[in-house]
Length: 217
Length: 351
Image (cartoon, rainbow over all chains, first blue to last red; front, top):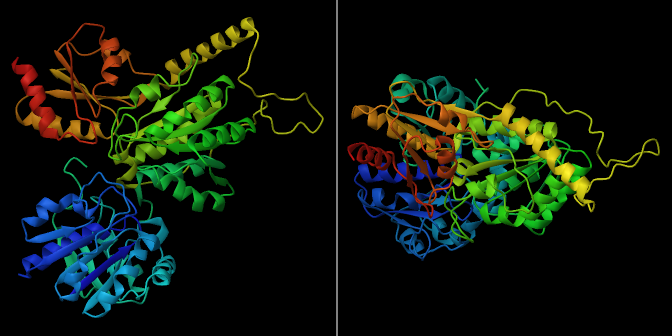
């Protein structure tokens, strides 16, 4: 299965991608690859977590120069496409926005030949996607540059540590108006325990700690 | 519920600038501040302003000079080597008494260095690289809410004292996301009777220049400017001083690293060591007085910076030899962990 993860800058694409990889590993899946295709912003990329993920059997591929977190180069390795074609579990973590999604031009032929999901992460607490209309406009910009269409959304409504159960319910209401299936809602475990039965998503990505935040942040 | 939004530091800086009445932005791309010009391309025209991507940092700062001379609120942004290129223009802005806001999202240096965060630009921002006698007010936010509030304030301070003002934040703050509440105030923009904005033939021409060929006049201008600096020192110095009576160590840090230090202080507390943070918010004017009036319980001062040690020199000036001043730093884009700082402090106390 191939999962392609897109979204607005700072919507939580990388946090979702890392959690999805760990979730698949927990389910006993083998040969999981996370392809870090973020050529938009060199900060907070999934390659920063290469050591942690390798402990769970997840490999990260980014550029062919060795996953260096300090490189600001439009260098991408597409070696992972052979794993896509072989039907392995591959998560493609794109860079932000429509510019980040343009890299799909190199991937779609491989992806279209295997089962796949193309998911857009949405957070209504980001001002550029704070209404269903703005989310729809944003999805159109992604679909306009991508050779394939977004198949579902990830509701990731949050205000980091300040997120409340009410914020998550509010986010699902907004995201559901977009009209695409909510494949996942991503939320902290204590909030899930509080309101899990009231939520609409097909699946839930429940975490206890953010992967991309240092403790002091 | 929507009073808080989730913003990146770079976006928050722009949001606050637009709310402060910024009507022109001139910039040039450089990591890790690229979201600033990108955000401005979209949002500044929507707010009735003008965005121009200049052909270089030098051009951008000179465009700032033009807009400021015309009396409008104007901003530019860059990162370390880009700020280095702007120094000539900054000196000219000072020499012409022009207000503007310059955002520096710093990375590791010197030279092109790397794209990872750094604090090696303390000297660059507080001592300047431009020629002549001058200082700039420099604000160093440590979270995104504070970045918003200080950018809004920076435009007022720039106008009031007719000076360029710098916002200095490391790449982490620029890139990090946090919930914040946008500034909900109307900007207080007064008429600039010195601006070169067209005289409609009903007043004398206003001339904006940093050129002054008569020695006695140039000296008088410098003396007047330094009187203004005294006023800025008196009224605008900002510090977050959390040192309490009973603390045996004062830890000093500015910007995001101050947050790491706060975590180190918690670790020290568990070890039975009482420590407090002094966080300069204005790097110039520097809060020297806070280092002259420390509780008598404080026996050691430890300065933590993502550099080889720059602010530590100002701390030593403030302490004036009364207490030992130690330093702990990382560079190159490497970031210290709270545990490293706690260990450094414990070693100092043991010895």
